[in-house]
Length: 68
Image (cartoon, rainbow, N blue to C red; front, top):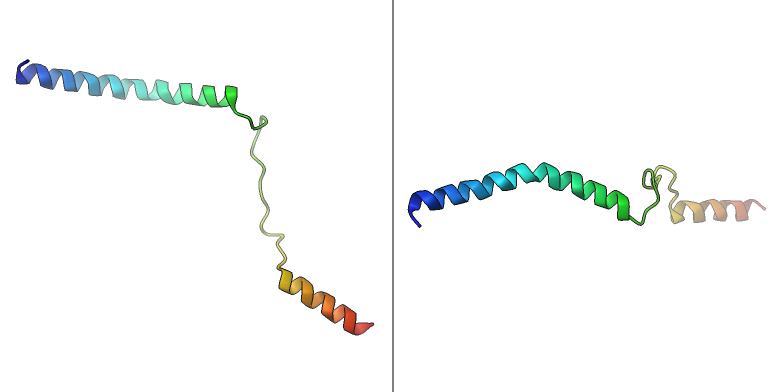
């Protein structure tokens, strides 16, 4: 195999790889949707803005206990 043939083979493989990447993405999305265990729709969202630390909660209980 000459150097020119080797360059053409490498360029051909690279071209095929680049052309098949969009097909790979579509196929991956399709397969993930088809066989995913999660239910349809969006994933659950965790709300971290409603977080109360345990220290604050304990202090509230201590002040309520002292008031009675």
